[in-house]
Length: 373
Image 1 (cartoon, rainbow, N blue to C red):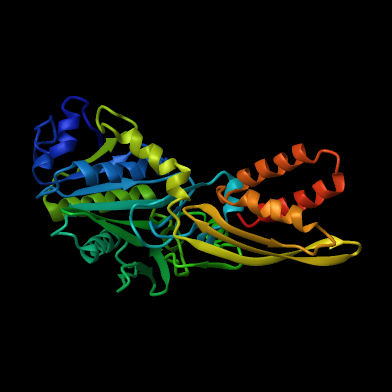
Image 2: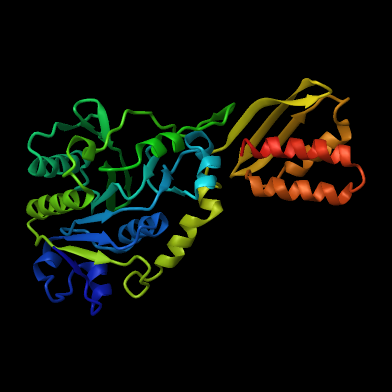
């Protein structure tokens, strides 16, 4: 049964789970099950941060249920250019987010359930959490063949990945979160989690591709709503708490003071792209010139999401060396993103308004560079 959290004393309830609000006395004593009313990835990740930073979890574990509109989420130590198709994401209006936890890249949509298990550091146990999910699935469909692996994933029929897992361990608290594929868009998932970028060299954590399948493809009755209720019921039974799923609004500053600041940080370019481990791109492309193709070589080193070293080599007879040097120096220090390159293109147009052929070549180079960003 879903019931909204009462506004009275709600902040105190969420801070220390001690205030006896109506209908929550037993729940407050032993633990809590929360479900987000938001489908915004940044808001839901901010809830995780807020609970981790502010709540007393000693003897009071929390299960947080949440779903998102289409989004790609990379791990704390990953490189988005290596992990996903950023150009396609921009075209489709799909958000990119970086988690606080490690692990690989995942795709979320409304056909995917996200589960976050909050405990003290001492009681942190990812395998036990996954076993709880398996029991909940089998309670709905006893014939379902789902097993937790040594890599802490969940496999359907011994081969299809239905859940990825990651965690964050703090000084005294910890959380483990995992996905559960119910009816997600697998075609879009596959397209988005395939990087088209070539020549990247990086020390960032890389994702391991897996075969995936929706639980709903196995049994249509395994919907997100049915499975969230089943997991909540299993969690309540394990922790001996009332089976109430408490609805929360992540944008409510009266309940989560300071959470809007966390949302803004998670949305920022500096966090999503700027936290990417240093990497380099060594690639080349061809341009058409007098019915033949010329090779343009590009080496770019990126630090904190900004271009630190840039070396674009073009044939002298196509683009004068001084102009190529100007392009290289102009790219150094800018954010490694298409909008910055567009500004550089317009800058050259204003400094050389009469040389249309030279500007055309400059523009071709800038467009090619944008293509690898």
